[in-house]
Length: 508
Image (tube, rainbow, N blue to C red; front, side, top):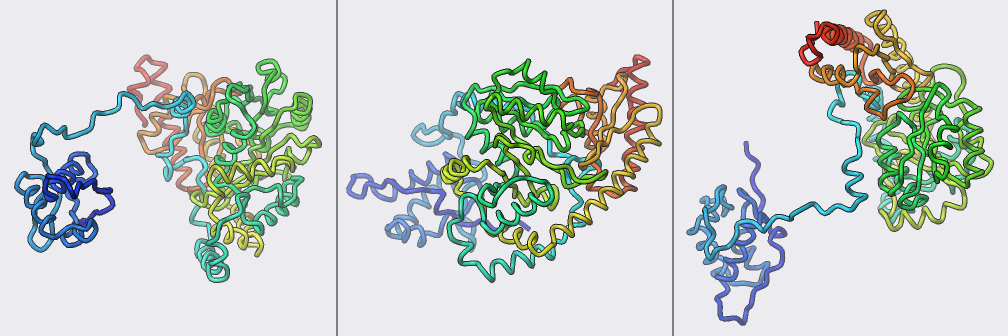
């Protein structure tokens, strides 16, 4: 059943009626309404306000409005339905009276700035595969205690609704900042006080905020190669000149970074679980990176995006905890640990950056919504976060073991998995005869989301492979998907070898 159209007053905007002019008011109103239709402010099927409401809104007599409506009806711009009202016609007259153009002349170009064009053209991870097997960064939402979360939201409104509705602190809800600081000190060995914690609407906003504060247009910034496209976009948005630095088994190659970008102002790294290769930065590399930053008076941004899910050995200390010179800015998020639409993250900044960050938040967006922050504070303070994290770590460890076993059986002699020690995805390395980009496209056609490693920036270690997320699906579904992918890979590879051509290779 079609949803009833709503009368629109705000769409019309203010009317410039010359009440002392020679032209009758009903003609002026008719022309104003007709132009609103032609401009698209009143769209086909929309209901015009009742004549009494429109007359009251604009201080006109009802007869003036009725006469204008009758003229529009006679010329085919509106239709009348008995008992329902007056509606914009679904098809307009071929030519508007008086030579009026049905549409304003289109702009010749979008008119983006250089920075805007750079951002618009920057590669980004496609999100249309969310919900399919192997989608990246998607947690198991079935295991999250949403009923408890709803209770916490309700309790926060009942106990502090008026205070939460007031203007928020630009740096975030103070109780939540204190709770996060305590958690990071205890679990990640981060050196911070609550005053240094800034709540942001997701880690991506935190990265963009830091980049805007610390980089001038044209400044050089190291990025991992291969690396996460969102991190690069945050730096591009600040006008940075990106310097791709290769990643090997020990993490980012600091010596290569110095050679490629000796004047870099900032390095953006994922030391605990590098994306997408999954390696952990060695202590030697960490110390070299810190020495470089101190010597160059440069900044290090540590994106600790999924360090909570570590499956071997004790938790690793954050790079920030080794920093004695105040050069590391630490960024984290709750989106992968809890649920993606929560959009709450945090940035830990050195003390001398707190005031500039506060000023920037006031200018940019005023701060992050307080209500979910208050609920998250209770979720942490009451022990629910720690309990949920233990549950998810055990759950994901089982799924990780299952997908590694499936890959070992289905891809024996053809490909192998590199899982690292943490995270929510594994890297399936492929032989050169099976190009990852082509296989990724064919996998998408059968409902599998398998981003190609080569799409994340080229020539890092093992440049041919697929990224397989495992957190959102049960082991049986993952096993079926792995077997489907293995059959597709064999057929695709065989087609390449025999000259049939990758485009015609089919899954078995």
